[in-house]
Image (tube, rainbow, N blue to C red):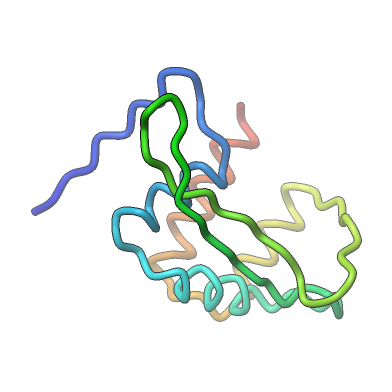
Length: 109
């Protein structure tokens, strides 16, 4: 079994976490497939992901950028909206379960 110890001293944003996972070997295609499996209906939701190595204070990191195939409009969603998207998505059941637990923790916080 492999274990990852995640200890972000100064905090970490979602793109920083995803960038570190990709840097450790998670294929970018998995992110794109998972995004597509959410089944979002907006016409501009096709995700484009780009990565580039960078150094920050002598530490090598992977810079992750999300873009969209067409003009993207910011959409506000409630916790209930997000739970419905995840529940009705084509994502595998194990990933759904973990995702629902994560968003529940965020909502409680």
